[in-house]
Length: 300
Image (cartoon, rainbow, N blue to C red; front, side, top):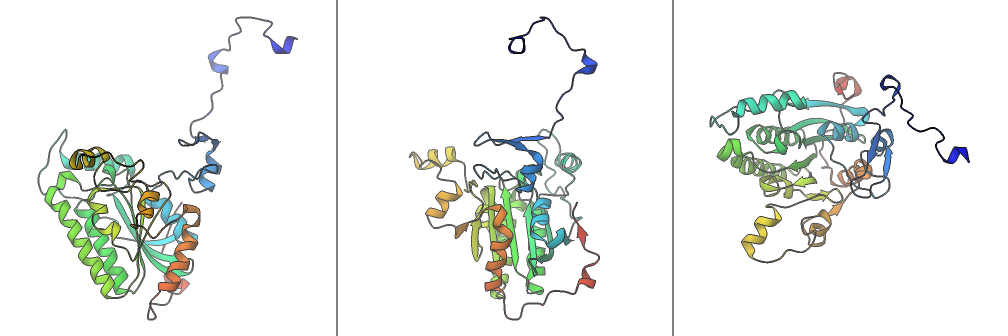
């Protein structure tokens, strides 16, 4: 049958007539290998429709998901890192920061904003892993501290979305001090009776895990997130024992009592609204009128 075999051999299509599939049209899940269109993958908030594998997303995606109509007011958007130690490795630290700014369009590894989420006021600090591995430098600590102050002063619940490789080595001791600073600010938030929810996403490690990421009134995580302080090899060499399989996964951490629950990203906004609705202080500020929010930023 002619349609089952090639009758003519050596058929060559001219280069100008070849059609290639444009990049970015398809998504292949790294976990279950299911293929879907990027449009469908984005509709599912970058979660695999087959196995619920959660892809990493940026702070802008969380803002778009959590804030009503994608409207929010960003806090301290122009803070940038200095170079207190004049640090140089393969390149000078200021050059590394500038190159990362050009490549990512970000000023540092965290963005903070406030707005309305499911009709309730909310302050959100969300980390971006693509900015030097989401490392915690002085700007990250300062922006989180200022966001906590804003939440405390306005009696508004605070949500921290952590995604980090740990402290930023280029700032050494300055970076480590952010652990103490943010923890102290969260203590003030707790004394004021303002709710704090910490969402741990993939990965949350190092000094971030050892400070603000695990200090929430509720510590929650996305499915499959890697959560830990040091890497498995370092831990194994330190304790001299084999480690349980998947011991740094969100599911393992939940099983051993360090998380309150795991939430699918597609359910995050509603679960958060339900939780904060129960925790909202009696004297919490009423939602600001729509006229006062007309200058809010709208995500694309």
